[in-house]
Length: 257
Image (cartoon, rainbow, N blue to C red; front, side):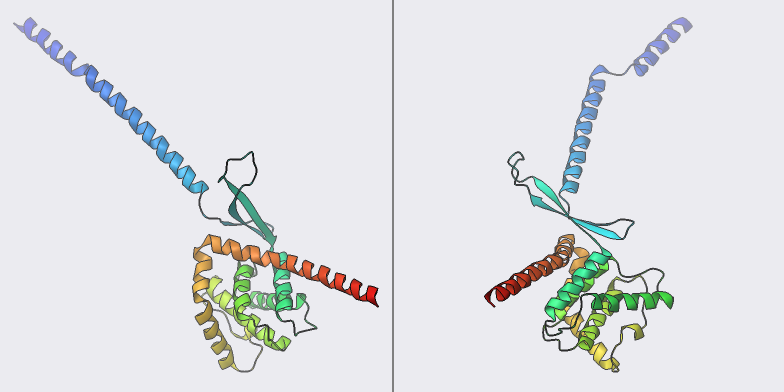
């Protein structure tokens, strides 16, 4: 009897150990399906990342580049395939573009040089560094783009004096510091070139009412940032075209004379 019981127990244990063939096939099938789904999700993630919005990158030499995509026109490439367009510029280059833009905009200021606005901006930045209000300079490519965005909608072509231009430009800079800077607050004195603080604050409120939507958009919409970035860099090309036109006009006048 004991022998029969042991044999029966062995048979039961062997049945428990050996898996059912149909069940094992189902498990294998499910594993294969899950693997296919995971691969599909990975491919979808990669595709979504490739089609994502452009980003701003910054290198160690204080140069920024913004990447956007445009359709390729090459006949060897399938139509609709995105093409990377890289807009790259250093801080100095963008500041020069900003200075050239302001010179063209403020056409009444005959003695204004593109380097003058740059000196005003760098002077404030240096002053805040020396006074310990910031640990690193604020003037970076991304922040210059922000200042340019404000200036092109705020600075009037009817500016009559360099002092007036400096007051408006430094107000834009102050708002850029307040919105983009790392510190909670900044002293007002480096940004003031006029005796009346009320005039300064009134100008600040006017700019905020006009530009608040774009100030939010440039930080939330990479496409918009890339467009403003490219517009600023193109300001130098406009200056080159203007110079060529003036040279050509001067040559024609001399030829006629």
